[in-house]
Image (cartoon, rainbow, N blue to C red):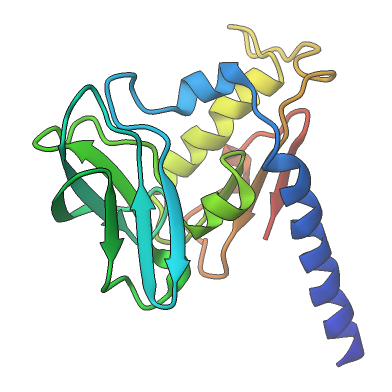
Amino acid sequence: MHSRRRVVAFMLAMVLTISGFVGNTSFSGVEAVFAATANTVTNLRLEQSGNHFTIQWDKYNGNNTYDIYRAESRYGNYQYVATVDGTTWTDNNPNSVKYENYYKVAVQGNNDTLSDPISLEIEMFGEDMYVFSPKDDTETVYQTINKIYLHQGDVDGNGTSHSGQQFGEGRYAFAFKAGDYSNISANEMKMAYYMQVLG
């Protein structure tokens, strides 16, 4: 029992430590790779009040009406849930598990240009900590990690890693929620400088 508590305490300390540096760092080169297209809604924020989630975003190019999409995981299947006037919306009927509510926003009718996602985890830990779920699309998980690897490891066209970001500012953590990941192969995910896997 005591050993289990020590393990839980250690893992919690690791997550809190990582959130301290992950949430406050960014690297424009990687942000450009993973950010939504320039012609879409940006700067999503999320607040929780009881069993309700309120999201806000910046007004885009004079548009007043927006479509809201929700998924159970960061790289899951986003479904349309509402159309609103203004730049704020409250989800009064979220998924029962609070960490299974991820939101994207688009100008009404432009579902091919969804925003970057927002969730409790992204709000807490920052955009450089990726929390994966068994409900995420496997190929997208691979692509997400390996694109960061290519940058952090400064991998050239021949697959050779150079000095990369050995002295760079980028810090990236990849956490996996509890669940079945038998469809994911560790060999498909490459690590370079300042990339860490948790789970």
